[in-house]
Image (cartoon, rainbow, N blue to C red; front, side, top):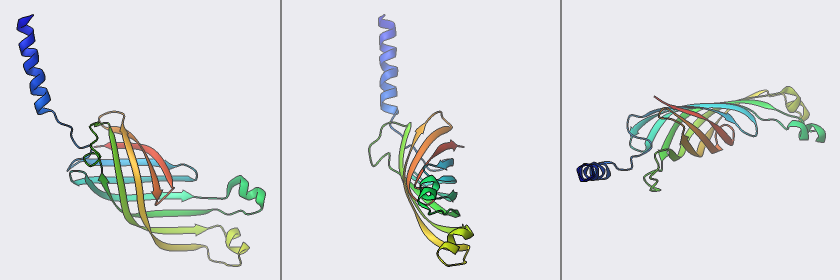
Length: 175
């Protein structure tokens, strides 16, 4: 028993002193997110590359089709439109700042500037006396999100904020 105790104690001490809580997102990490809008019909995707520990940059794209739905139809107000947003995105991962020691959980904030391309149904614009059917604008991406690792290469995520659907959820792939 004594012969196993000291080597086990030594192995445990080596593990304790060499193993530290690592950041959930590191320099060189590559993440691909694929999600859906909750509350309005929509889909989004983003890709992120770690330029330094806790900071990633990439590209965000989304499609959304908000509408008044059944309640709007009952009230006599019907409209829907298609919106495509695309632009650069930066994300700061808060694991170290919040002192999270769980590598399976990643909290982050993301921001960017999006080109927004919108097309409206003619019924909507005719109801308010206009004939315009498309518009282009710039909007801000400002989101708070979290990922929960399901495996080494896959995680589930949820985000809230502007840019695409206000509430989004989906799957992240690390490669």
